[in-house]
Length: 281
Image 1 (cartoon, rainbow, N blue to C red):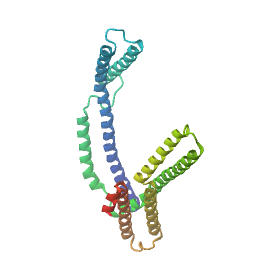
Image 2: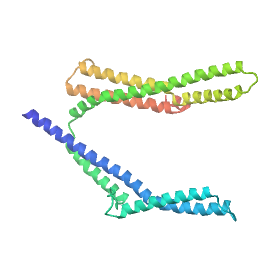
Image 3: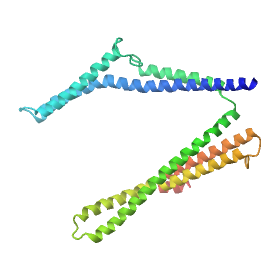
Image 4: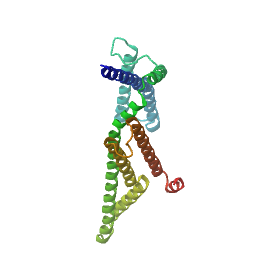
């Protein structure tokens, strides 16, 4: 019975935290949608006026004293009709109660932002009150670690594939330059192909040196292997995780966070120019 009470309490705590986060996320979504609605509500009439003025300006600039081609008239007319329809529909939905109920219609973005700030203010004390103990959070962190390892491996495979594709394209382009140079005489049509291949080689070489996909793949794979090694050591209870469970979980969370910080530092170093990397090192 006590165990069921404990698990029920943890479940209620988790549900409350999830509910607060969902409320905040829902308000952020509503703010994004409302911004799009307001942009369309006021942007469509402005675009309509711009289209009509452009229609008049084009007639006076390019076809002064003569008839404007029917295709140009048709294009401007079609754009104007579309904007008129969009404006009428949006104003009707916004200011009519009988038609489709637009979410948050009539509300300003600033009002929704205020609701978001209030929801976040309510979430902070509730989260502080409902936050589980450090041991429980560390145990949850341990359970989330395999997903982090999989993410690192997935990104590592992505950069490795990018590097391989770049290298193969570079190989074929270099071989193509040599082959076409030896094969074609006179220069055409081989000259155009040589220009394209030389451009490809230059772009790939520059992109490889700038983005460094091979180094990124190596760092990600190394971090994933290190984290997986610590997960295995924690599961098996081998060094360095040979103490009490709460101590092991704290040590595990500390080690994994340190490795993630080191990974981010390596990524930042790769984003720096070569001279900047030497200064950082």
